[in-house]
Image (cartoon, rainbow, N blue to C red; front, side, top):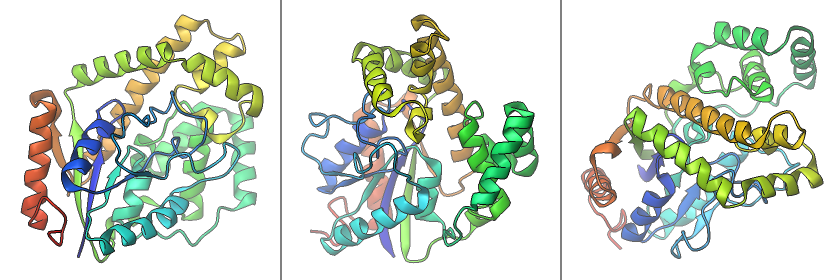
Length: 312
């Protein structure tokens, strides 16, 4: 069984920072599992790690796609698998860091990505959305698969339609999230914060993004790509687009980013709590160093060493 450490948790939980500290201890590399950070140019709003913040640790699957290019959980798995193999051959434990649940699940569960989305089905769902509206589509999603609905941004029509598409086509149904992948022995770490502490972190994180130039970043991207490219529908970007279009003032856009981020964090934790093998690290009770030592302890117990699974 090959080792694989997953560092996940809700938005704003400190995954990147802790993953870098862990990678330095284990002398290994990090694979990003974030559906927005794969896109070039989408930096501030996605919380993309800066070159300085990497502290020299190699990060994979960041800035690998242009905004108009399609990228799915299947694409993520296909890109990540050879990186894992390379690290294992070098005696290193891969660390996956990110909060995109389906990306994480593609590594743990033997999901069937063979079926391609049906163009006809997508058109039918888009037409249904145009006729009945978002509220109807959300109700339909909850009726068909309540678990998947909990992990989807229900304010984002594109995400709701894609979820319905997966259900209707049999593509990555909830039932598939029970068949474990063979040959991999993951250490599934979830960074868990008390709700009020997490929400405060999220609110402050959004303000830091604004100070770092989030609105300028989105305006630049909007001039080049418009609002139809997939990552522009992400939290932090779609709200600023409304500001650019004159639908919201700046204060409202910031407030909505904070609200939507908090809502997303709640959905993420609901999803993670359903994972029977996940180990929750109580971040509200621990310093960063204590949390790191706890993870290293779990790694030693599971794999027998804190320097790599073959003791290099």
